[in-house]
Structures are given as C-alpha cells and as structure tokens.
Amino acid sequence: MCPSTTGSASLSSAATAVSPAARLRGLKPDWISDPKAWRTEVLAGLVVALALIPEAISFSIIAGVDPAIGLFASFTMAVVISIVGGRRAMISAATGAVALVIAPLNREHGFGYLVAAVVLAGVFQVVLGALGVAKLMRFIPRSVMVGFVNSLAVLIFMAQIPEMRDVPWAVYPLIAGGLALMVLFPKLTTVIPAPLVSIVILTVITVGAAIAVPTVGDKGELPSSLPVPGLPDVPFTLDTLTTIAPYAFAMALVGLMESLMTAKLVDDITDTRSNKTRESIGQGIANIVTGFFGGMGGCAMIGQTMINVKVSGARTRVSTFLAGAFLMVLCIAFGPVVSDIPMAALVAVMIMVSFATFDWHSIAPKTLRRMPAGEIAVMVITVAAVVTTHNLAVGVVLGSVTAMVIFAKRVAHLAEVTAVVDPDGGTAVYRVTGELFFASSNDLVGQFDYVTDPDKVIIDLSSAHIWDASSVAALDAIETKYARRGKTVEITGLNTPSARLHGRLSGELTAGH
Image (cartoon, rainbow, N blue to C red; front, side, top):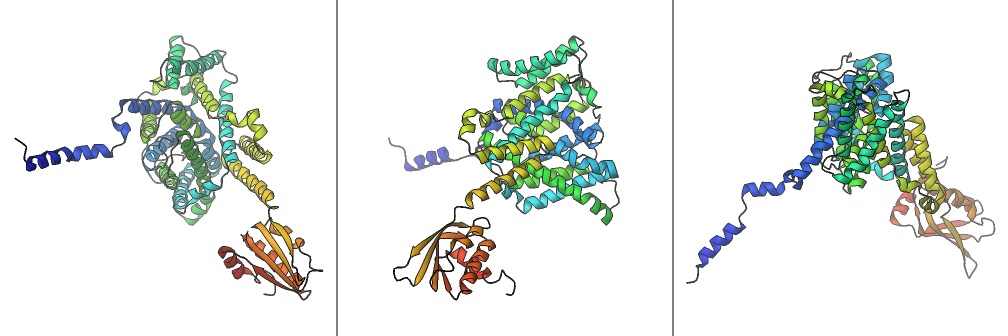
C-alpha cells in the first residue's frame, strides 16, 4: 500500500524543520565548538600575559609611575579592546610610545594630570575614529609599511640589549637554550606554543639549580589586588584642560597610528580584513576605561601581537581577552611564581619575535636589484627615523611625506604639450596630455610660443585632468600672456570635474579680481 500524501508532507516538514537550538548553533563561529582552537587561544593568551609583565613594568618606569600602573593599564586595555576593538587577536596594552609622550606631563604636573590626559586622549580617539581618520591608512605606501615592520623588529631586538649587558654569564646560555627550544620544539608538536614551553623549562632550571640571574621580580613589585575605578585627582578647570590637551592629542595620534598600522599588518598575516573605524573608536573607549581605573593608557603592541598571531597562531578575541585576564591572575594569585621567571626566558621570546617580524625578503639582494631606488629610499628613511627617535609616528609620517615627494617628482613630468599645426595657419592648436597638479603645472606655462603663434589659440585638454588650483592658475597665466599680445585662447575638451573646478576658480586666483 502506498503512503498517503499527507504522511509524505508531514515527513518532509519534519525533515526540513530546524530547531531554535540548531539555528543558534549555525550562527556561532566554527571555532567555538573546536577544542583545538580553544586550546590555541587559551595558551596564546597565557604566553602573551607572561610577556606583557616585564614590558608593562619597563614602560611604567619610562613614564615615571609605579609598576602596578602599567600592569593595570595592560589589563584594562586588553580586556576592553577584546570586546570593542575592530581587529581580532590584536593585543593592546601599555606601550613605550605612549609612555614617552606622557612622561613629561607626569614629571611636571603629577600623576593625576597623567590620568586625566589618558581619559582625554581616549575621547580624542573616539572623535577621530568617528570622523574617519582610519581612511587615511590608504595613503600609506607599501614601502612605508615594510619600513614600519622592519623598524619595529629592530626596536624589539634593541629593547632586549639592556637585558644582556652587565649580567651574570649564565644569562647567555639560558637565552641560547630558549631560542633553541623555540626553534626545535615545534618540530615535535605544535599543540603547546614553543614560547610557553621555553619559559616553563628555563624557569624550572633556574629555580631548581638556584641559578642567580635577573628575574621578573627584579623589575618591580607586582600588584596584589585589582584596580579600583575613580576620577582623576585634578581640578576640573579650563587651566587643567589646556595643560593636558596637547599631551592627550599627541597620545591619541601616536596610539591610533601604531594601532592602525599593527591592525593592517595582522590583516596581511591572517589574510582577513578588520574594521579600522571600529578599532579607532575601540582604542578610545579602552583608554577612557583605563584612565578611570588609574592606568597609564596604551595602544596596540606589535611584539605581543606577533607572539599571539604569528608565533602562537591565535585568531580570535578570546586570546586578547585572556591575555589581560591571565595578566591579573598571574600577578595577584601567582605573583611569587611569576617573579621567579628569568628575564632570559622572556628575552629569548622577544628575540624570536623580532626575527619573525622582520621582512627578510625586503632586503634580499634579488629584491633590492628589482626595487625602484625611490621605494628603497622610503623604506630606509622610515626605518632610520623610527630607530633614531624610537617614535613610530615620526617614522611613518616622514616616510609617507618622502614617498609623496618622490611620487610628485616622478609624475611632475608626465604632463606633455604637443603643438598641432593648423593647415590654414590661422589657429594654433596645443594638445595637453597627463595629470595637471601643482608639480606638473609649473612647467606648463613655458611650453607655448606666445610671440609667433597666430591670433587664435586652442588648448585641447581632452587627454588631461585638472586636479588643483595651481593648474587653474597656470591656465589663467597662459591666457593672460596671450591676451597681452592681443590673442585669444579657447580651452576645450575639459571633462566634467575639470570643467567644474576651472569654471569655479578661473579668474579668481590673482590680485585685482
């Protein structure tokens, strides 16, 4: 007997029906149900937390504040940015760039003003992010980006040199052993991050053998409790605002530039896109929260981000959140254990990070032979500026300006003027080809024969484009030179944007109009 159509319909409905629980599972990212992904994120967060401790303490010293202030900032920055940031797996914490900016304020006016500046810097970052400052990233050339990455690698390595000077001889074999472990251990297994294995083994060796070497505890006392929120201890007056505003704005710019450049680098490494506007606003929110918790502020950290993304393989916000959470757990619950970690172990990790960060392909002889001289110059200038000033913002700005100057010089000669002979001899026709802007238009005026040309001159711009007021002024100057000799000029072939700009500015750029 054949089944009824009603029964078939019921079976079909049951087969295609999706329960609410199943629908919810479909909305979850794949990694949520992947134990391997969870293990990677958790262990990556732990490794980053261990690497953050000495860095945060060092940056606190640069800023002239108690080590706990830098650790609190790293905790709040990492936790908050993991929620509101636009780049997954990127680590934000207390940084040297921010410490250098706000150190003079703390030295001259006190800690309360520093905290107030951190809050105001966060407000500036939120405003700049909302205004679309992240879109300026498109104007940073690749050569500047390569220089940025290479200079960061150099700075990371240079930061380890003080830890290798005037130290017991045992430090050097420990560093070498740590590097060897990180190179060889991944060949056995990648289940546990090699940096974590290196840190644990070297700590066990130094403690078990009672080897006297510098430890994390020698950097400063770790906090014993969580930070407490509160308002900055400053008078809320206009005078306070004018005092902190320059420092806050400088911190906002440096923090955003370093964060957006790091986000772009992580985009390239992971072959994914991030929301730069959300990241800009998120950095601001994280700094506001950090300021109200008495932290020194911060931004994205290239070294710890490379540990998280490139070395440990993390890809989600979980690792960023756990890096901050583990940082406080390690300091408060396991302070004595963490204090015994030899600095040599962390130095080895950061040296490995510096080598992994550097773009070795960019300096290969084969690459340098093929690369235009201008591109190489921009990369070298960026690296030199960053390494000399220890300021990433200075290097990026100087490199970008250099690239723009080289580009302008290169395209300045692309505008060509070709004379077309009129068979009747009554009209001179000039065809202009190329892009007309402040650099190329400077040579335009001298390419016409004002004396011998006939009474009517046609300038054909159908193969050109007018970009700025300098080009309009150059065309006005050409018309004026012909007019003095009683000759008329007709400009033809303007495309719509060029015609609009020329019509609006022509005759208005010289005195007397």
